[in-house]
Length: 329
Image (cartoon, rainbow, N blue to C red; front, side, top):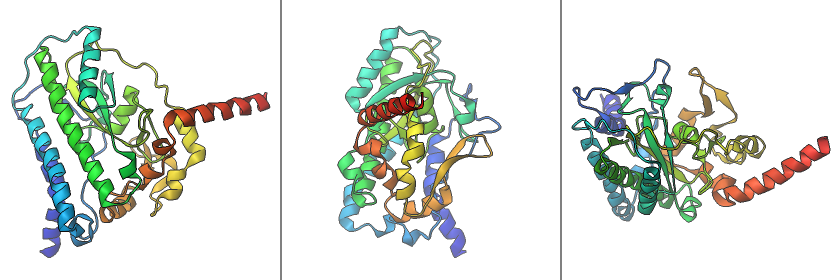
């Protein structure tokens, strides 16, 4: 009975997020996951609850992080209400300058980069989940480098919580902005999500997935949180090529995140899993340390793109590559 009670408590966050993402049965027109879609990772810590960092927070830490978590939950609850009624807009054609308007509005709210993606692959919709439209606006928010460099720590944990709150607020306000223009728009969930945000971020051209399984972007390296806004607009500009994929070649000889992981949860080489996706991390090994150490984030901290900067690394990489190619010719 005690073990059953513990498992129930561990699943509270999973159940809450599932509730937030549940669409009305009469909503209609949803795009469902594919047969080979992967399930979303559980938030269950896989260690006894009293060993998790959250259970060890001091009173002052609880008071500091509570407003941030409340902001996340409030944003997610508001996001759920967007699904209470299907938007009946048949208008799908928006002028090109409309995307720049949305981008500038999102950036004014705190987004650092914004892209548009068409025909989202149903394979990237998590098993058992669904999305309202096949097109989406994908955006990132930045996490403060000074706070991330303290990882694993409460300060880092609080910064990540702030990031999730920022995602929720921006998603909801951008949805309002798009709907007022006469189009359909729905926010995704800040925590959890119906899709693999990292994979969608790469497909949209926001960055490239590194060996740590995180999106590496030109604006903040790995120090980003990602979210999406689903829309029926189908005329916005789409990135046809991703200029950031050179990052993976750099990762293949860097591997600083692999060496820095305290529990060796990052594969020395990404592995192809049963769904045909690249798997970078041993999830079960990662989540145990993650849960006991303030959400860890050591791989973000160690990633040179998070500290030295994307463009500086790219300049050095291209210079070395040119010299190497010249010597080999």
